Image (cartoon, rainbow, N blue to C red; front, side, top):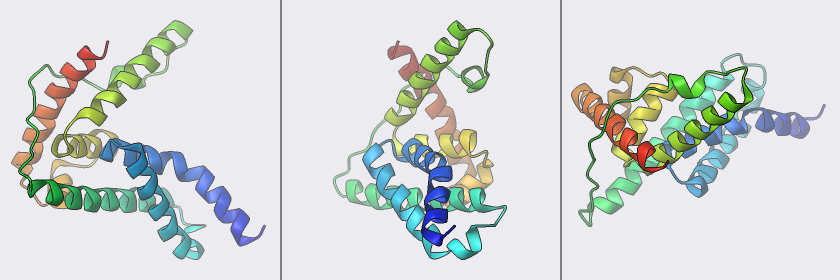
Length: 177
């Protein structure tokens, strides 16, 4: 198989993971598409090393996370000039587990899919300072310390943002019914 076909298969194999992660972090599909393209451009530059690496998924997640964080930092800097900040709203706590467990009953599968869709819509509506830590913590299973270091803030701020984000997300999911 030639290199271009092998890279095309590589992209097909990993594009959903990369795009899904980017759209969760950025809450904007068009921006996520741009990030996804950039991730795969970087992967193409290193394809000889990546093609047989067992750590390729981790590398793709790291590059995606870093590009999204860089994008959000630039976005935040632009908007801070205009002093436009969103405030979080209070609600109740929630858990991802009930949205991710497969069931044998098709009606339960449909209900689970609907809950997951509401969750995704809710995550996209969160402000970046809450959405990004929630995605990194729950979907990428990063520790509070890892998230704080990546974002350049204190662990306490990360805990607060995740807690407030969960509360806001609970309210957003309830409004989406």
